[in-house]
Image 1: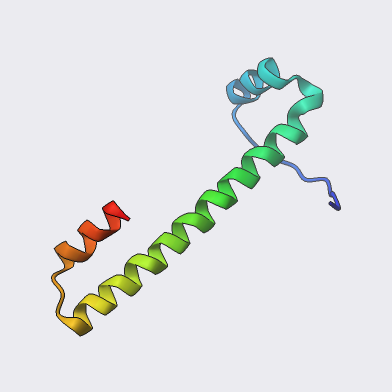
Image 2 (image 1 turned 60 degrees about the vertical axis):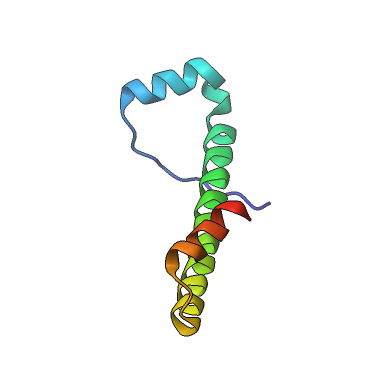
Length: 76
């Protein structure tokens, strides 16, 4: 993976907590891991939104009550 330098501005207290957890030499790895997880969550929630939108659209076209569609989402 190619890498580049960047500068972040964060509260001093937060940086101290991160340093206590991972050390000054572990900052890059820590922020990389956190950013990757945040991107995965965001992509996952966007995918879920697309599924919900499609189900709502299908329900409106087939006249299936939204409560039934929502219930199916919870069960599988």
